[in-house]
Image 1 (cartoon, rainbow, N blue to C red):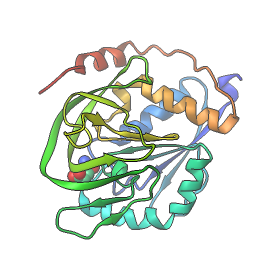
Image 2: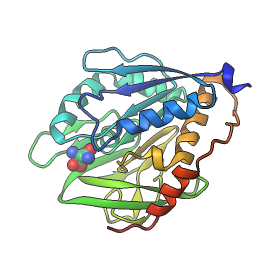
Image 3: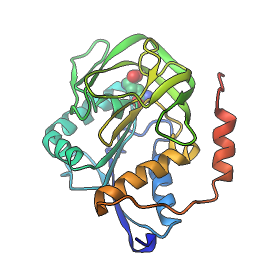
Image 4: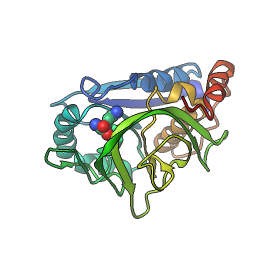
Length: 244
Ligand code: GLN
């Protein structure tokens, strides 16, 4: 199928509350990498009180515990719809606080447990230490294998059941600084602690998500035109193994 005849619909969930450390850059990257190929992008910002319609890809960023509290209630009220979207092959990308709400719950330090929406079998509990710094991850599903980004969280996330990590931590702490893994994936739901924002310096992951969203919409794998990613790749490579 010709890319110029294709369309993808993207929803940005609660950006007025969860948009820490430039997470909006992920939406800009997904949108631009579609538009540079002539793929039309339908975009919808979902705020508190809005209904959540069908989309090919949903993005949610990170935030402090307080903002997470407000979003958690809203997300939970849309849980059934979002699980149905997941089971229909929709792509989800959640960063940090958003990722934590993809699991069954997030237990902050000194507050009531926040219900997650169980898009993946995982849970998070607040730890005593805040993990801040650069992260390098080695995946087994991307080419190149690496993902790079920046973490800033005290939450410790534990994966269960069929939820797989995004990859092994090479530099940094990742999910909980104990099991050596970062992020989570179940079906087309992806969560990660990598802020930064993540996708501008990981264009191969952005294209991987776009391909999955197009396959969900059109029912077939669609080969994306190669873009000139020389600057993005140079940035990515400069961050591999960066520890400070
Ligand atoms: N409040 C959560 C934590 O500290 C998420 C923080 C974030 O989104 N950066 O773990």
